[in-house]
Length: 151
Image (cartoon, rainbow, N blue to C red; front, top):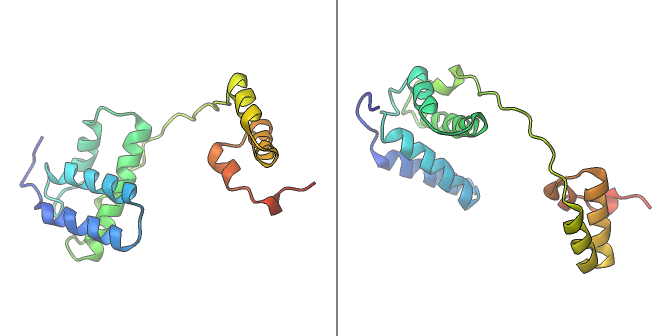
């Protein structure tokens, strides 16, 4: 539902350029820009209220976890708008992040672990074992340095 004039898209372009200039990964500034454009298409970012944003978020057909991700993106947008002098306040500061149920761990199925083990070099097997038997996620195992492992 549109409750006022939409924001000119040059504002969203400038926001994306600012994120690009900060060196954020392309995927980050693209997703943040998409969220900014979606809200800006329906509301004037200079006058949108916390209630408007909550209503907009509630209208998205997404999970609570995804709604929380949208809110995080919008907090960044409004923080930038305040810093650039387009707004006096950040309406997202008045919105609580939606709670999301804790995710259950999804360990690698044994057949995939055996297949990976059979293809891995000895050094890679150490990381596979570390991940599989210590419950590390792929990203956590990838960040382990040789110096972190004791004989």
